[in-house]
Image (cartoon, rainbow, N blue to C red):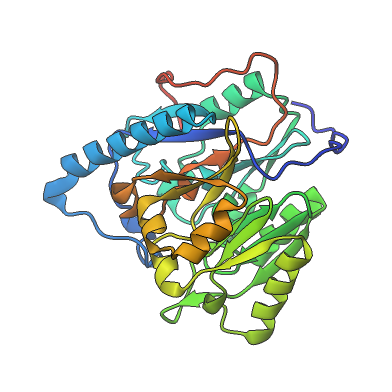
Length: 331
């Protein structure tokens, strides 16, 4: 692939209409990530088979719902031979951008680093106009990590990158990413129950016309006000989420372009935590696409984590990939 940077597209879209998903065959809660992910629940050893079966079924049904709503889903399989329990969350290891670039990210835990798949990269290069790959994984050699759109919430139209700093989201690779993209970094501190919020995307979701954010998770008044003003200055209506709603994954949502209207993909637990006023705020701009993923959520992530949005320009005749791929080796 050429490393030549391409000209910026004339029209920047915030909302993807295609995603990559990974269906796990041996799903379980990742013990390597449990120490800093307060959303995670440890799997019982005698329930391993049932948990894996339930997770497989949840992803399968989610793919069907997204497809029926007009979202293109490129589905890949993880049969489990490489011990990658969090592979269902592909948004953490790569992002794509409308100028034809793809970035690879340094992830903190060793078994998560094995999730990077050459077959997915090759597929995207065939199906889309992918001009260059920028590999940021060398930052991980010195302990500087940044976990994709778990760590970074992009406002592509305003060229902003929001990031809640934590053990999974560190400033050095964030600034390198923003320099490469010509985006402005907006780092801040957030916490729940006295511990840093491990991923930005559990407490902030930026859509085209609105943003869902847990402002009460930001302890510093000035940082909280600065984030609020920044979101409002870019034309976003703020849907403020309580810590209790954040714990139900109400912040872990993604706006997608459906067949007829924008959609907000969120879990049934997230929807159940929202009040009628918040729902009314969202429905001014997007239809709710409710997805039931309680087993996946036991691993500490929800709907947004399961969706790697594709912002690349499409080749002609792009097709959803919904059949298992050939065996792969971690990159």
